[in-house]
Length: 229
Length: 229
DNA sequence: ATTAAACATTGTTGTAAATCAACTTTTTTT
DNA sequence: AAAAAAAGTTGATTTACAACAATGTTTAAT
Image (cartoon, rainbow over all chains, first blue to last red; front, top):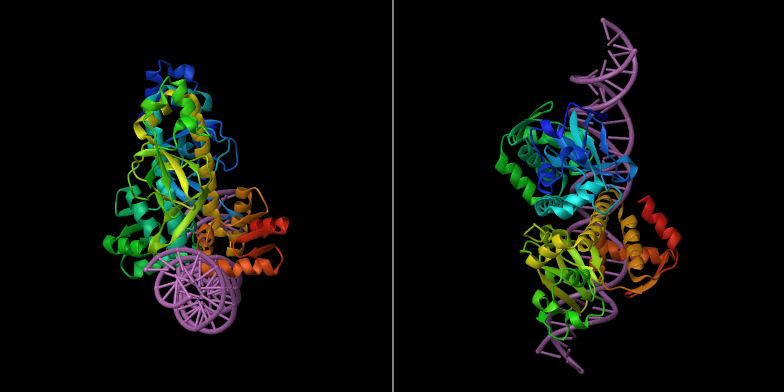
């Protein structure tokens, strides 16, 4: 993490809900004391078990949100893509992060003091609604992950995550931002089986794999594999 | 579900945060139009996939909160014990329940119109803080469940859930409110393995089992089994 | 340019846990 | 009280997957 003065709220290309909330509650951006930081690929943005001191907002670069489980095994819950709230699931009255976030590429993050967030949260109806909406989506996502991990076989889980990544890239053809191990962590399976299944799917002409370039050739079939579990 | 006039906010023995929020925002209980219902054992209180129309508050009787997964297999996320918010994880801007709740015994539930909840949520600082606190706890709980299901073996998972139930009853000795199948659904394992492990633990003198009466004899060992996974 | 480190691949093996099957006991219904 | 349904139990069988091993390939560091 490296503080940066280059990026400020004033030159932000994609103003967040905090900015409009600030405006509506008659506060200036300067007094809000928001600061901006740059994270390099692989840098930890927030760490499971550590205290929550700021609301974090991702403005550039993708990141992974994951649980640090037993024996150094991670489970990636989802990929964060700007603009995105990072601290969302545990920033209000939970003092400790329930998960970690790491940059998948060089990223930019805004830090907003928790005290201010609470004030805005109370004063601004819109911000409240907006955050709760995102919150709800996260929860639905996580519920689905629980079912997936416990009740689907690895084939269905890999299919599910390929579809997820395809949606994220908004294309059937995309360049993976993740290693094979990380794909495995998304589906909560071993790295070896991830590789095996990717080549299996390729052999069956469901996808094409060239290194990190993936193309989904038969989406209906992939969806079917995902659905049957 | 059966509406009841016997139970009202005025004779409530355990007033909820909504009542104080109503008072603080200068509203009367009558205009709030809160209604109360009775659920018999096994009745569904709210249903996964259905629209969220009210905030629900459990005042009497225990209930299970669970996901309806694939092939009619459920995963119980936790047990609700009054006083408890039921609709918590998805009541604000998520229109659909992400989970189901079923009464484990005869129960009483208050229904509070979502419109009113939103108003109170915005007007009452205390209510907001309070709900978010409970929210945070739920999320932490669920994160833990994900790790448990994916990375612990069934022995560790059953141990974990026995400890959970013991805490819930605030005693090492308790009468199960759940069938063996449901215990399995808490640990996300099969009914058969649940039975097997309970008798295994009994044989090892870690617990004593007589029908649905459980006593934890060696809590330190049970904790160890839970921790090593 | 060379070496080290991280990443990817494929085959094999052991095992945890689901499933199957048969049966007993308890609870509920008629 | 009898019948039916639900809940609980136990052993045998099957299978999905993690773990291991061995080796190739790409990427990063000096």
